[in-house]
Amino acid sequence: MEIINLGAADGLPPVDWPAVAEKLGAGSSPAPDAVNSRTTWLCSVNDDGSPHVTAVGALWLDGTFWFQTGPRTRKAANVARTPRCSIAVSIQGADVVVEGDAARVTEPRDVARLAKAWAEQGWPAEPDDSGSGITAPFNAPSQGPPPWGVYRIEPRSATVVLATEPGGLTRFRF
Image (tube, rainbow, N blue to C red; front, side):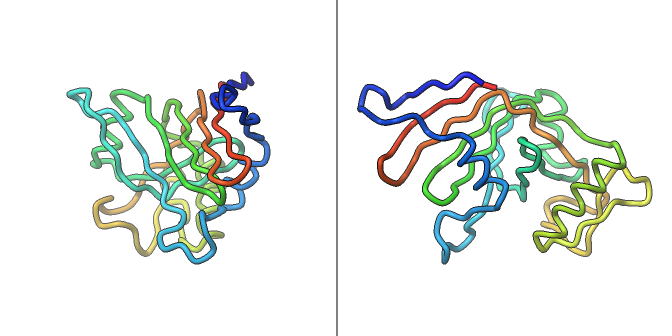
C-alpha cells in the first residue's frame, strides 16, 4: 500500500489506515445520536460521462465495500458499462472515500455470506432460490422487485480526512 500524506505541508501526521478500516468494519457512525448516521454514497458514471450519486446500504467486509441493487437501476446499468465508481461515508472522526471498480458477484457462497452480514446489521436479506442474488421482505422501492444483485468494489485508492485532533488528510493506494 502506498501512503500519500496530503496534510504533510500543514504538519499533519498521516492517517492510520488500520484504525479507519476497523471503524468501517464496525459500522462506526459519525456521532452516537446521528440521524442516517451510516449512509454510504455511491458515485457511478452515467452514459453521458456525468456522475450519478445515490445512497446505498453498503457494507465494509474483507477490506472492500459491497452493495446491492436491482437489475433495472441506473447504478446497475452504470457499473455494468463503466465499473469505475466510488463510495463515500462518514465514520466517527473521519470522512472516507474509496475509489475502485465494481463487479457483480454471483458465487452462491459469497452471496450467502453477504446476505448474512446484512441480516446481522438488521436488514433480513437472504439468498434467492438461485443463490446468485438476494431477497428480503423489504428494500428501497427504487430497487425494483427481488432478486437484487450483489456488487463488490475492488478498492484502488482511499482518501481519508480526519475531523478530530490532530487532523489529517491521507490518500492510500492499494
